[in-house]
Image (cartoon, rainbow, N blue to C red; front, side, top):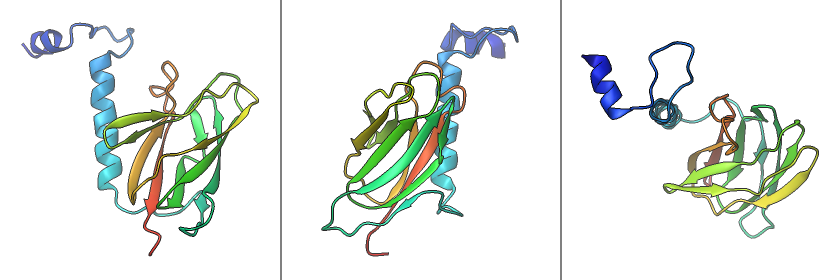
Amino acid sequence: MRQAIMRARCPRVSWRPTRHVSGCALVVMFVLAITQFTAAGPPVRATAYAEQEPSVEPALIDVQLTEYAFDPAELQALSGTSQLQITNAGLRRHNLVMLIDGKEIESPEVRPGDTVVWEAPVLRPGRYLFWCGEYRHLEKGMIGTFVVRDSAD
């Protein structure tokens, strides 16, 4: 009975263990990841942090992309505009997609060996998810968080 209900809602789901995960299952995993990150509270440690004064040029934050990982996977900055220096140290093309106010904001594609400086949109304090928008890179775990703190803190 349960399988019939699931197949009615997600017709592409295969119940054979050798098949890949469907789009519905991917959405469920993504929603669970968002729930986990928003419920996690403040980060325990900062892996990348950019200090910036409100009237100064945007902070420059370095992030490296490799096969299915961001280094660091957690970025931190003060509220306002930040620039990300995105270096592709992998063998495949990558990009960075952020979910901001329900909209996906995408960086330019970064080819292997290239570096791109991308000005991220103005961010209010909070936790933002980012991931690689290339085919199946999110499924392989290429996801991270961007923690933005209030500049008054």
